[in-house]
Image 1 (cartoon, rainbow, N blue to C red):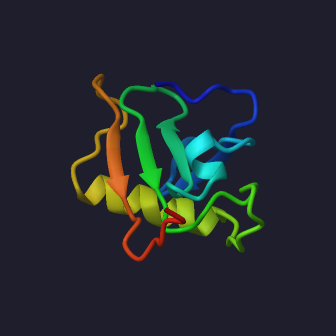
Image 2: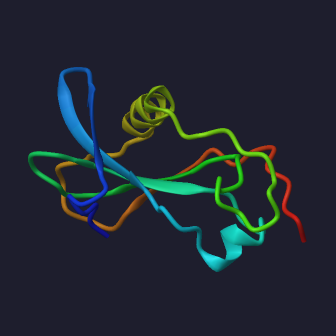
Length: 109
């Protein structure tokens, strides 16, 4: 799962450049507020393992108009540091590294 250049944003954390991307349109499950918003992060120069972050907020474009906080660059930087602290190695090849920050999320089910 690579983060495409189109629609991705650049962020620098501890003098390392990363790219991150949030889906513009929610998945069906996110649109119905069954699952929280997620975004992906990868190393900009040597993409390897992708960090997939699950937030504790609904997607901002959910179909119910449920209030959602935007994903800010400071949130992404914090998630990158947490992922690195939990063993994410962004330049090593491998399957996506999942970081679950969804504690406190209330599904609409």
